[in-house]
Amino acid sequence: MFKSILVPLDLGDEAEAKSLFASAQDFAEGMGAKLNVLTVVPSFSMPMVASFFPADFEKKALKTGFEELTTFVANHGGSDIVEKTLVGHGSVYKEIIGAAEEIEADAIILGPGSAETGDYLLGHNAARVMRHAPCSVVLLRS
Image (cartoon, rainbow, N blue to C red; front, side, top):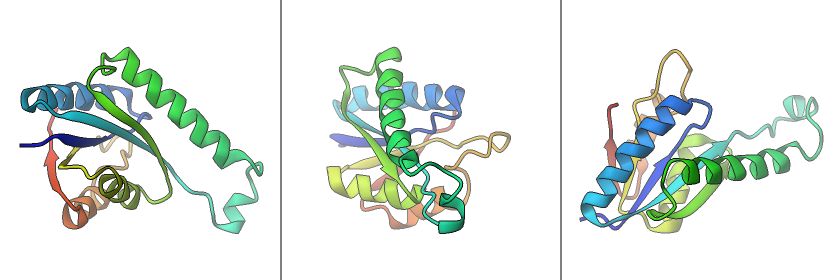
């Protein structure tokens, strides 16, 4: 049914990311699908906020995000099933939707998040992804 699945991961919540990634791997393997993993670096584009960071902060954050996501995939046995490793920059739900369109995903797999950690996929971002996604959205509970 699905061939290309997007899995956004919050690397700031390792336990949730690990659980979601393992579940997504099982889901994808059962369908013979490939995973595409995404993490999002927030934008600090407001001049007042941006002035507190070095000029190359966002560039370094994107590079670090990509390295951390690549390491995460390798450390959690995803090298064979992951097709693309992506890092978005800006609004979380817009980056998820944009990535799904770019890779022509058949589905997006989201995790429920954790209220204690303030996970960015909890609440309005997940609802926006579900409303505006160009494909099916699956919410996996841990």
